[in-house]
Length: 161
Image (cartoon, rainbow, N blue to C red; front, side):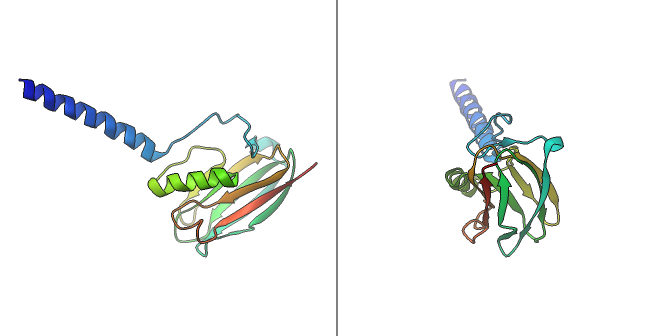
């Protein structure tokens, strides 16, 4: 009887560990979407002042890779994957992107539920609506393993009003 309880305890601990690891591996790290960050905040689609189309391709480049916006502007990014492999566009500071890159290396199938990120399969398109609340540079990159290292990155230059 003691052995059966021991085995049951081991199974329970293993199940909890598997569930916890699964939650981390899935990477659904949704946060407070209304919070302002160092790069701005999620925008309201109805308040978008313009639309910028960004294409992601298998040559590991974005077109365009540099975008000019004004402080306070809300942009609707229409993001298109014109390649044959999965790509993403993640907005962030360089530090945030590099930290997230390390997570993506550990959990390459990570799903995103953040307004500043979009992952698209081949031939798909989606949108990010973002308000740029601070002047400076906001980086964007594809953090799929190997893509960032191959040069798949760009910048949004946020000028004063």
